[in-house]
Image (tube, rainbow, N blue to C red; front, top):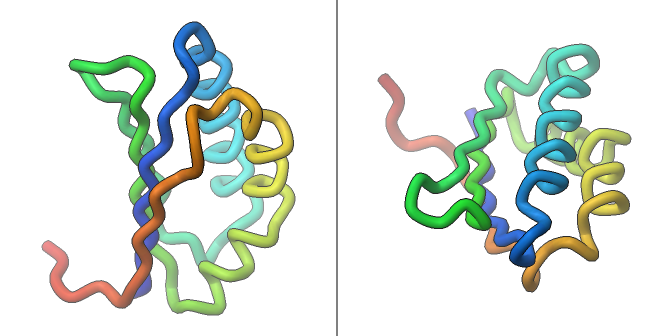
Length: 98
């Protein structure tokens, strides 16, 4: 497995729009990306502007397809201006899973 974790911060007052855009990515992943094994979104309980995605892919090529697909590109086209700075992204091979 190959993973991607992204930390995103919405500008204050735009967290609902960012959440809606993330949910649309999830819907796209569910319908169009069989090699994306999981796509989780967390909204911080302490800071509603802070979101974290945790994504698992069959391999790096599947991650690259996801990142270049309409779902991910649509998110940044829709929500990019609503983010408070660039996303922090960590990718790599999965070392442990339960």
